[in-house]
Amino acid sequence: MQVHLSDSPEIKSLRALLDRALSKAYPTTTLVRYLPPPPDGRIVVVGAGKAGAAMAEAVEDALSSVSESLVVVPYGHKRPCRLINIVEAGHPVPDNAGEKAARKILGIASSLGADDLLVCLLSGGGSALLSLPSTGIILDEKRDLTRELLACGAGIHDINTVRKHLSDIKGGRLAAAAFPARTVTLALSDVPGNDPATIASGPTVGDATSRKDALEILSAYGIKPPPSIKAKLASPTAESPFPSDLKLTASEIVITATAAEALDVAVTFAEEQGLGVVNLGDEVEGIASVLAGEHARAFEFERLAHSTGKGFVLISGGEATVALHGDGKGGPNQEYLLALAIELDGRPNVFALAADTDGIDGASKAAGAFITPSTLTRAAAQGLDPQAHLTRNDAGGFFERLGDLIITGPTCTNVNDFRAIAYIPSRD
Picture 1: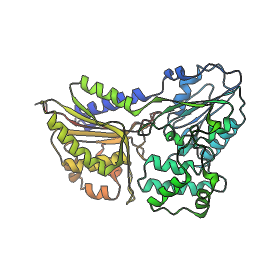
Picture 2 (picture 1 turned 60 degrees about the vertical axis):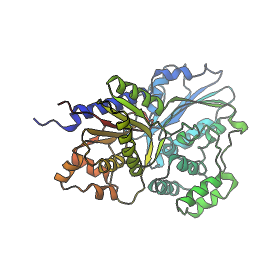
Picture 3 (picture 1 turned 90 degrees about the horizontal axis):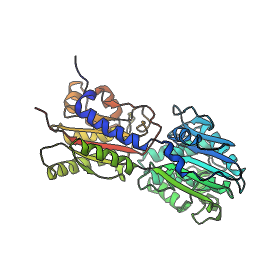
Picture 4 (picture 1 turned 30 degrees about the horizontal axis):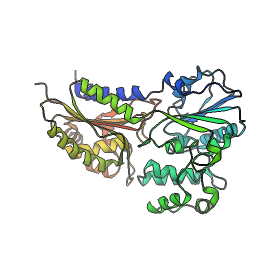
């Protein structure tokens, strides 16, 4: 009986690293340590993100009561909660369900008084899920603008800077609406650098960027917004509350899980397995195909520098992006791996894995994929042209044909990308 490559010891070893990282990032009951004592008034729980339902499960038993609640998660991410109401909406492209949920969350916050407590649970994906366009802008216009930014390969900071200035809930506006109630935000970071103002576009955090910054970002990517968005960004009403705004003085945020912590756990496990390790860190950003070339060179340099005859792995996190030129399928991690396979050109004993820790690479159903020394020869045997697939952004189709996709389903967490390139000597 033929053993599939996903069951090979080398790929199982890389999957074990990913699994350790996911376990570290998963919301647990340790979240409750960050909750304040019960207030004199009401406790309200709101939130958004891919980890939203798991976070709600983790905190609800520690709350004495919940007067009102609404946490919005992507379709397929709902979990059974006893006290906290969970609804599903569109991601990565916002939909009407997300707009409806965001409007209700803003209304809940606006009803609070000085003795009340707003608990906000945020994680990656919250920006798309909490989509409440500014007055005068319709959802389709903002949705199209988001698509354009994604297609250009824009980084999350740039995308969220634009989003915040076209929203009635992002960029500190949610906490400002809740004032004078106390707001405590628990967040899982999916952004390089862990900037609280970027996680889910910072609905409870002051915004140091300006509408001018948003206009400059659109100009830099050659995007011409429709008249309504152009007019909004030209208006002072587009400015978000600054960090020093009085209405944000009752708001605080705690980042409860980061990519760096997840990578550290993977590094420790790799070392326990006898592998030499270099960790490039959790802030690696850039176009996926460009990163692949850089990492192939870095891997070879580090492997030679650590040449002891034993296995070696190069680990990194952060966020890869894709500049769309074709109409293929897949996501940044799959595109990174296809470009990496081309760069490595079948190098013996070298294996790699790349996946998004939320279980969704881009808009695909796969978390990512893996490559082996035989990737290109197996592709040739099936008549697949790796470069042609890369050119049309069809890494997903390439790895699907090979059967080398990694499919986890929703993981209910998100600390961004996980990448590992390993030299694993033959056991002969």
